[in-house]
Image 1 (cartoon, rainbow, N blue to C red):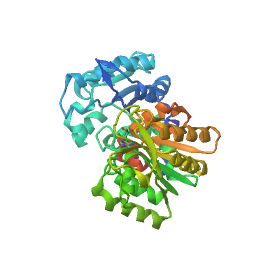
Image 2 (image 1 turned 180 degrees about the vertical axis):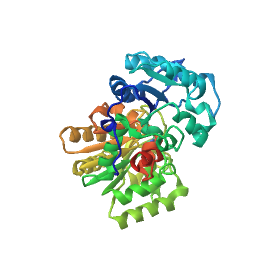
Image 3 (image 1 turned 120 degrees about the vertical axis):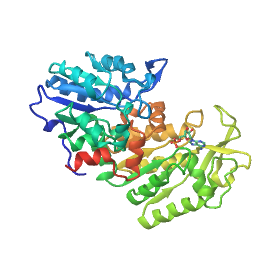
Image 4 (image 1 turned 90 degrees about the vertical axis):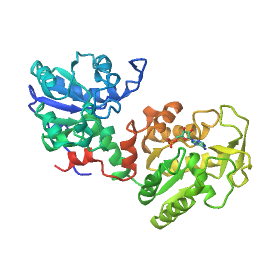
Length: 399
Ligand code: AMP
């Protein structure tokens, strides 16, 4: 990975106006922030800059307002939660450019923190429009990006600004990039990837990239059914994308050429209803009843997965092995998560996991804190697993 500048390279910042791109796109229920994880993740960067005497000016998006102000997507709704997490006063400006921003910044003392209104209230944000970027840039001397989760977008506040101001990675961005580097960039081998979840169709690029990079790819969840069916095995009523049989076969071919072992379930837990505690039985994949669906991988497959985790020096994980939200179909996911956590705690494994449901699955297993790194970035994490260049990262590393 090319080097990027971090806060360690920032000296003498007292009095400097630092534009910090953060991820405040948090879930809100009944007008209250229901999960503050993303705010907690960016707090170290904000507090470090504030303690060093900088004027910390926060830029973020919230929701998808499509370039116009929308009252219920105002960052003023999030400001109280930011204050609570930081335990510091956070001022708010009703626009991220123009007079409201300029006046609020002029009123700042060294060490103060200011949150600017939703960048996506302007069309220029998502279009990365030169004029809008220049307006944003007027408000700062230095740019820090701490929003890895938005780095797959080349927007004004995630990419454009880095062309105007000296650019640095914040602490969360730094931690994320270092963890990802250990996961797939320069990993210690053998590298094993676990990919589960519902469908192959959403993860074709990801699977195609992984088979060229890892030593073994464990496929679980609903998507395993498509691979099993592609080998001519009847999967009954299991979730299966029969139209992707050719894609599945081609991914297996690429894997063979690249020397990547593909590990598919050999048995499964099947049921007739998709609901908690539905009557279920364990069968070999060659014996899935015509009226049943596989909702989890079976005990023999769990042993296989855990053996591969045992052999791995590095594990990259996205997607649950079964329908983990409903018991008892969470068994394989929980078992593999516990095993990976144990290996990690014993210092034998670097484990990097991320992407939507994976975080909830690891939380469900109670081990999210025991992994080497769990990314809360959804789309950006997946694009990284797909091997794509993330514009918000590229701009920090190229210059
Ligand atoms: P994804 O967002 O693609 O990672 O998919 C996650 C979803 O896949 C979860 O909601 C799981 O319940 C679902 N899932 C995992 N395994 C299966 C399965 N065998 N059959 C149906 N759904 C599954």
